[in-house]
Amino acid sequence: MNVHDSERLAGLLEDAGYVRASDDATPDVVVFNTCAVRENADNRLYGNLGHLRPVKAGHPGMQIAVGGCLAQKDRSEIVKRAPWVDVVFGTHNIGSLPALLDRSRHNDEAEVEILEALDVFPSTLPARRDSAHSGWVSISVGCNNTCTFCIVPSLRGKERDRRPGEVLAEVEALVAEGVLEVTLLGQNVNSYGVEFGDRLAFGKLLRACGGIEGLERVRFTSPHPRDFTDDVIAAMAATDNVCHQLHMPLQSGSDRVLKAMRRSYRSERYLGILDRVRAAMPDAAITTDIIVGFPGETEEDFAATLDVVRRARFSSAFTFQYSPRPGTPAAELDEQVPKAVVQERYDRLIAVQEEMSWAANKELLGRTVEVLVAQSEGRKDGATRRLTGRARDGRLVHFAPVGPEIVGEVRPGDVVTTRVDYAAPHHLVADGAVLSHRRTRAGDNWEAGVRPQTRGVSLGLPSFGVPADQAPAGDGCRAG
Image (cartoon, rainbow, N blue to C red; front, side, top):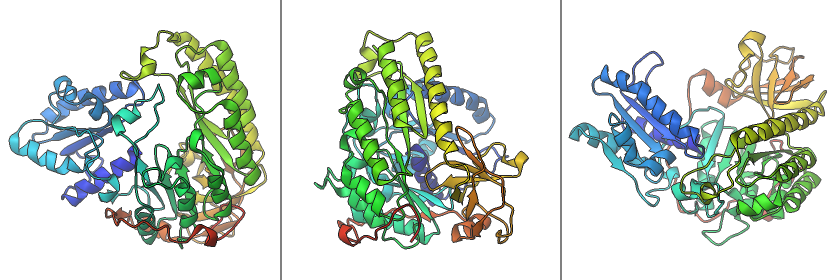
């Protein structure tokens, strides 16, 4: 979500006449789009601001802006701690950035503008997309949940849903620009529709995406287990371009800790959802989020988390050590777990999950995978002469761009099929000949240095396009 907000900020600035600074130039404007989910975000922001102070002193007229969740949280405190900052804006008014820069420059003083509610929906703003082949599409902003560890609702506000027609119009605009893959974004995507009274809206939206010609892959993040319903599973299984990939945050495997977190599900319900997903889509890759060291977590609670991790067979997991966030109920609890204990448990969780990830990846040895080539996701690709991309299930694949089926040079945005011959916990390797190579418009755009620049979409359309009962059926995530 932060990456997509940054695309909106870049689009706004380009619309206002700014151009991206070259890598070797000192920029006239630097914008920090911040996160506040973890404590180290604060430290990184103020550290980076400190490094920029002498740069700004040596570059008259340079402006520094700070936006996003930390700006919403710290407000004018940012200017007090770093008085060389020119603009502070919050999560609800990212569209104000160009005007705030102008005002600060004109008045020669810092401008701080923090709204308490959403000014305009971010999707109504222009965007300068980073990728020629993949695009983010927000379906909602904000969150109605009250998880005791999470600061997001207080910074992003209550959930606001976009109308389905607006979402589909933005997806179609991206596809018209050559994009092959979209990821639907929301703090809780499967509560989508609450605002306009349709609890089955998310499944309908997935099916409607299946009717968009040229859209090859649809992903989404993140659902909440509380709201996850079987109609979404059915839509994923029946819609050809919806990928068999699910990111389902667990947070803890202990029912006692889940209750303390105000996560309104328990471990058996969670595992039951995964069972139903795999019954409908046996090839589904399921990933998760897990927090270690939540206040009051005992060794027994942690053992329950390890048990669920083993039973869930996640293909990968984003694992976090609990970080107290001021203003959240969990930060006020007395039973904070000692850092050394948290670290030891965290290391054990990583070891178990790596074992599970490696076992899952080994099951793919010898299989053919379709890879959407990325610009650069492999740190060693230069040395190994490999390229990197994502399989349909989201797994990272490093492959050798050689073979009789290569049609010209393989470019980011192109699509190849190849055979997996090595598996590691976090990636797959295919060093044999590429089995097929399809050049795409996205690859043409990458080669020409063209990136999608979408105008804001706000059409107020209530319809979903293709009705659910007319959506094309299928058995996987293949383009029609």
